[in-house]
Amino acid sequence: MAPTIKHASLNAVLKGVSAAAPGLLAFRGIRYGRVKARFAAPEPVDDWNGAEIDCQQYGPRCPQIPVGVGHLLRIPEDHVFAHEPEDEFECLNLDVVVPKEAAGDGSKEANLPVLIWVHGGSQVMTFGSAASKVGDPTKIVADSVSMGKPIIVVSIQYRLNVFAYGDGKGERNLALQDQRLAIDWVVKHIAGFGGDGKNITLMGESAGGIYAHAQVVLNAPIKRVILMSGSLYLSFPLPSARGQAMLDAVEKKLKEKGYASLKEAPAEALVQAQAEANVVSLWLQDGPEFQDWTQRIGQVEELLVGDVEYESVLWRNGIEQMTPEAIVQAFEQAGDAAKDLRKLYHAGTRPTPTKLAALDFVNDWKFALPVRLLERLWKTSGKTAYRYTFDQPNPWQRSARAHHALDLVLLFGGLDADYLAELDPGAAAVGAEMRARWVRFVNGMAPWSPASTAFAFGPLGQCGEIDAGGLAARRRERHLEFLEKVEPAKLNAALGGLVAGRISLLN
Image (tube, rainbow, N blue to C red; front, side, top):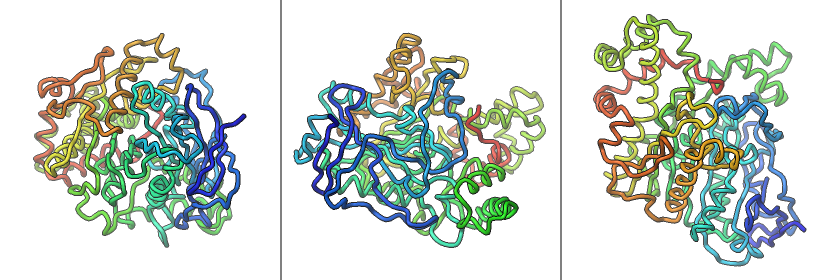
């Protein structure tokens, strides 16, 4: 018999499933908002009028260009991912994984801390959803119970790509609006699952980290934030005018097929037009709400922030196609900083070192340096910040290194966990250590000593606190010191010549 709870604030009976781990319940595909029309602001779904709601299946995701997440993660090709349905009007849904004892009949006041997970995907696709198992939080919740520090995890779906960007004529940043609605839903309704709506940690990776950082800046009611390989530094908010050429290109493709506009074309046609217009990543649109975002920490008391050793893998194939001359020309866009920048990163006439120079610079400027800046901001604001490094190589293909998004596989542990432990015990140990440290943080406990410089996850399956020397052995700290002294506009000019149109999850 399916587990059910009578949820008072939702005025509904929720029928869920027993999760894969003993003692856990999962309630999937719960609608937190409705989309009445394309590009419309989301509206809350707060009252079900006493209905029984089937929460046994994952809800649909936003329509998107299909990309195999297994490619980047090196997941064996014979692994079959579950089909994820798509619907632009039904994609505002979330999943809740909760210890059975906390949920009870929905009337207990367990007041468990809550972790909200925001998946990534370059703001255009779903990477790390619970349904894919890449971001399935079951193991995190199970480990929290085993530790005697139980938590609830909520995974959210939201609009993506042009469906979230808008058509330039009305609402904008719809993904942020959707996510904020989901956060507000958790504040209002998580008590019915045994959670504490005043004790929320928001976590995002890559584009999810961009969104999570944006929610912090926009003063979302969250107590802690975990930024994994992503922040607003990775993708600055840009003026709406910057996106007009992209919208025009997509609309041109639609009109060639006989459709009148972005708003009127079928969802499938809009997705196809984006593919033909090469819309492989997007950004947030700037506005007064983002003024001075580099100095704002919202309501967040504690930050956990870090990166992986090889973030710039996303641009590897694209940069591999560049000549040394083209790379040097891109570096020269840094103006009077170009000569020192090239020397520091070894960008010259030799093809291989110069391509590596480009990848290293992208890695440091968009990922490693922001970790340092965010940690400093929280600490100078009188708050608490914890920094980590992730250096454990891919267990399926170690030559792929500790690359972007691999940390999700080990943290969530939802993909072939038993096989992974047999294949690479060190990787499994790193994943277990990450879950333990994350659970402590979500519970308001120090994940490691705040006096330590950072905490290192890997390599070789080894984990522990490190000092400044240990950090310098893992990251290009001297390079970061140089980058801090250069005007950001100059570095962004160099960056644009290296990365524009070259990002891909098929690396």
